[in-house]
Length: 250
Length: 389
Ligand SMILES: Nc1ncnc2c1ncn2[C@@H]1O[C@H](COP(=O)(O)OP(=O)(O)O)[C@@H](O)[C@H]1O
Ligand SMILES: [Mg+2]
Image 1 (tube, chains in turn purple, orange):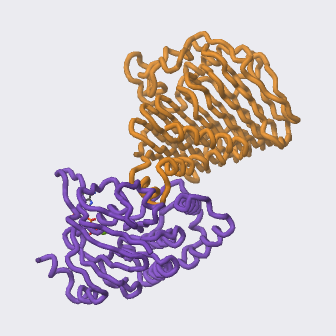
Image 2 (cartoon, chains in turn cyan, orange):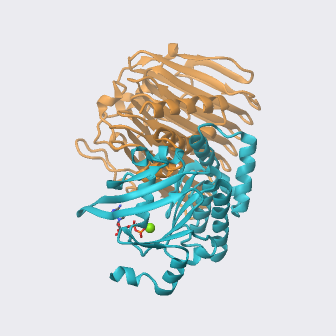
Image 3 (cartoon, protein in one colour):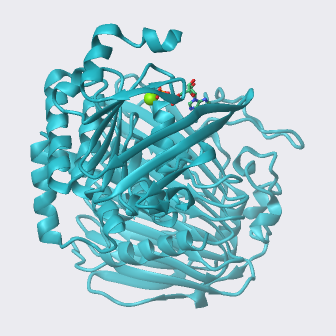
């Protein structure tokens, strides 16, 4: 069993108007196999939390810690974090012209495991994972995210999640911009990865609808750079009924 | 960024001394086989505006040495290779120099390397001509390629070593012939190479013309393709990688002077390091007679670091409305931090990420040469360039 701990995390970015503090002391602890939902209004700092855990250079940690099984994540480079078992499914996946999906997937798999996957089983694994996510096989030869629809990008993120088999996944609004069919397909993918790999999940979402398909063990309400309240799945139902107004006004 | 320029009007583009010469209509450009007919090279001339005369390392002089001893080749069935006098009537029929350095090559090369593919010959292997420089004396080389009727061949011109070379390659692709011609520029540091290619395509002929430029302080290639018979097709490809201080310039020109011909021009380059500079000027002229023309030209550049600069200008002159299609695209983009972050977040190291992106971008053009040995070797050259950063 592994643990990802975010302790009193303060994060700021440089803006034209100077340094701006976005995260103001975040505490979240996730164990293997747990599903945590982070819910909050736009601009509350959810993506900043996700990027900070993954190590995006734009975000500066000014205080606090991130530990993976007690190891200091903040000292690791972005690729070292991925190799240590952290995965970020991005809200806005980036287009990489000139790099095919198949080449990208194989290179990433080789990088995180430290050795090239056996070709025969790898091809079979990729084909099966793509089939499960209803991704057409022609995507293998397309450039990463180039010309993908919003839904295709999100399914491609989950494809990577299933193939790279991280220990912890941060899903940043993976549910946004999906129709109901795509939402189900993506949710099934997350649930498979959760079950097969004892994955710990930090699921960032703006809406409650994905929680019908992915059942959270814990819900954190995120407001103005902090966790304002936490509870079980029932907290999501309360948010569904009442919205964020109560927290935002407070 | 993307850019395009309107051609100047006929007759308006005069050479004026001391002031900037505006872009002129391509077919109006002055031509001569004699170096003395050209003014001294100056960045004020449109043709030379992207470089300083010093970068030519003496190639713009009136008198140049000769390059015969630096050229080697094997033998193959169906190919006749020999040195002929440059006064031979076949020499100079395909192209006439349009700039001072090409004219210097023409004037100073007393012999011309003739590479003749026999009628109906089908070459099973690529035929390779090695041009390996061994000094810094500015020198001239003239090559005449004749692909005779119904022949089918792959020719590779491989430039390496330390050279300062002014070169003309005339390419006569006769009716129904198929020619795959590759020119590789992988010179040592300190080299300069200015090369004018002139291709003439006969009826229903096909030319694939590729240039791959990686090593050398200055490489400037001006390939001209002229259609002289209907139904012919040209594919012009270019791939280049400029490191700090390197200047790589490509100015392909397709002259649609016959009906129902097709042209595809695709150049891709990567740049890294301070003062890495690439220039691409792609001209296409569709003349009144060239009804049914189908043309597309594209240039893409990938800037890997700050301090590098890619100039890219497509020009399309259309004199008839009766065409199949005509288009162009030009874009220069950065390998940006977000792409890098995405790849790193999947466990891929910075170096590996750059490798992946650059090879993905450029190798596709290398592969179009269809010469496996070359693709493999030049991919390694690219990898070394990436590793050196
Ligand atoms: N790189 C950045 N530069 C400037 N401001 C930023 C940057 N990233 C985020 N912000 C600001 O920080 C706040 C939180 O953003 P974000 O983490 O994207 O929120 P969420 O994902 O909850 O919508 C917003 O006000 C946003 O404008
Ligand atoms: Mg967000």
